[in-house]
Amino acid sequence: MMAAKLNPDKRVMAICGDGGFMMNSQEMETAVREKLNLVIVVLDDSSYGMIRWKQAHAGFPDWGLQFGNPDFVAYANSYGATGHRITRTEDLVPTFEKAFEAGGVHLVDVPVDYSENQRVLIDELAAKTCLI
Ligand SMILES: Cc1ncc(C[n+]2csc(CCOP(=O)(O)OP(=O)(O)O)c2C)c(N)n1
Image 1 (cartoon, protein in one colour):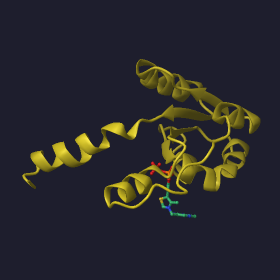
Image 2 (tube, rainbow, N blue to C red):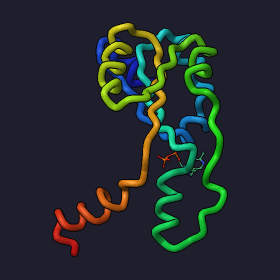
Image 3 (cartoon, protein in one colour):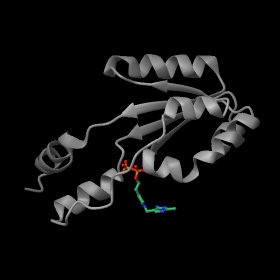
Image 4 (cartoon, protein in one colour):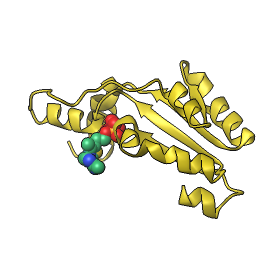
């Protein structure tokens, strides 16, 4: 929010996990009141995803790391911001473009799928960095 405040002519995007976002989401009121130009991306997996994934990788039971979310589009709209939901990958960039062009505070709800984490972040990364 401060980046947007200090740089009103630049495109500012906040990329948040759904868990982290919901710990401070009431600050959308400030962003709207301050008339900021800000695009908030919420990576929506209804979990503390990285913790869940790391714990699974370490062999711990999967417990207490999933939660329900509000309807993020309705939630953003209720603050006077503009909510968007991505349902197709090809809509992602055009939605960002439209949000930046419109100005004001936008929330973009982006469902994410961690099922490829093992392949991308462990197997392929290790191979590319000669760790195996
Ligand atoms: C106020 C506060 N409480 C708890 C934590 C511990 N913590 C660090 S990351 C995390 C989970 C974040 O989940 P999310 O934002 O959904 O990110 P994901 O890993 O799913 O992308 C938590 C609970 C924290 N950093 N701050």
